[in-house]
Image 1 (spheres, one colour):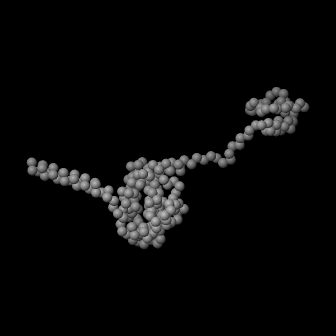
Image 2 (cartoon, rainbow over the protein chains, first blue to last red):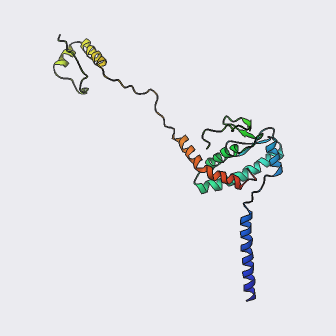
Image 3 (tube, rainbow over the protein chains, first blue to last red):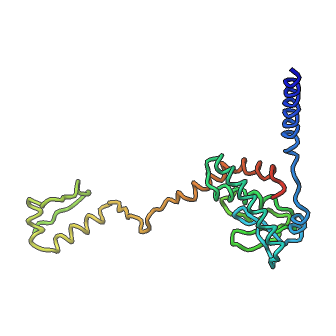
Length: 131
Length: 86
């Protein structure tokens, strides 16, 4: 009897925690300070293929950070691409179009010719296929 | 030689052997055939030339574009939900 009540309470608490957790999760996680700084300084830029690239000289720390972000991006792309019935490349390319469009002034992005460009207040140079 | 005046295009092109009076007349000299061909060409016929370049329909690009437009909304949400890595 007692055990049943405790179990029920525990279940209720777990459900409440899950609900709260579910509500709290979309509160967007912010960029890691090192990543935010690298973006602002133009050390990394958004590539056309949907991944992050190193613009200048690569240091081991920078390379590790970019690799980590790209691995996590790839995992997200793979999951969403499967859900949408698209290929990983198609999804990554679409995300790349949008990520370049969302760059802020001073950040780096890759133009359709492959060159690194610094974002100005003007729209970025994007592939004609981008939405 | 009898001169035949043509006032309009021939009704149809003969694929089989040509028979009759005209065939006999033309058979006598190559010049007769050339004259007939020239008259036909100048007789108001419209000549349609096939384009030299083959017509290529680039389906690959269109399909990719269609896919990108379809995925754009979902990809936008994905970027916002994973703001730490974008």
